[in-house]
Length: 195
Ligand code: CDP
Ligand code: CDP
Image 1 (cartoon, rainbow, N blue to C red):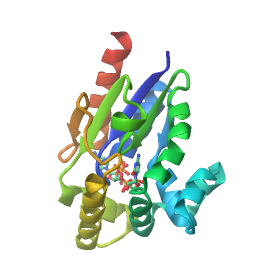
Image 2 (image 1 turned 180 degrees about the vertical axis):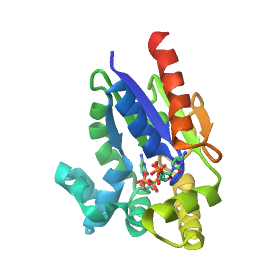
Image 3 (image 1 turned 90 degrees about the vertical axis):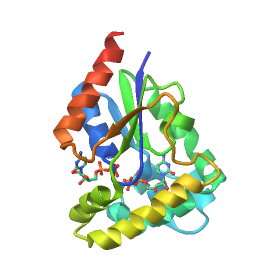
């Protein structure tokens, strides 16, 4: 059976970095599901049609990592029809051998409720804003406002809101270096792989 790892958490908490580290270590497939919503937002027009017709090339746009694309993503992500159109692709991705790591907001709660391991990654919002600002060369104070707005929208929406699955392991990376967070997660995966 393929080993599925679900990683959720708020913006810039370190989900993607952790997902990549786990995928590299265990030679698993990795899907940054935020890119799907970023692409739908960036395509413009009818978001439901965009989600239904999304192609792999749409995920390669260079502008998807911007703060604006993040905001647009969180707006289209409130639409239940947009979300529904993206479910099958994510679920098929999740069951590839030998394993897959998916990071997003609703992986442990909605997309992969039977994942072998669920992680909920957090960090205090000042730390997250500082990290994302450094990454994008943006102002940390402005980034903090944007991240708070996006987190609030993601947590408040009716469909698949941002929240930890009941059986998720919480990982607060506020005071953790990337290598330490990755090492902690690798131990958790290893324990379940050998169980
Ligand atoms: O995927 P998500 O938006 O949750 O966050 P990320 O893109 O993995 O991480 C956001 C930024 O924080 C990146 O620049 C990471 O290198 C950095 N980071 C960090 O400084 N310390 C960590 N423990 C994790 C991530
Ligand atoms: O990397 P960061 O955490 O900043 O954002 P992202 O993971 O690329 O996600 C961008 C936006 O897409 C989020 O703010 C959510 O609104 C939405 N999203 C979602 O609703 N469900 C997912 N599984 C992934 C992202």
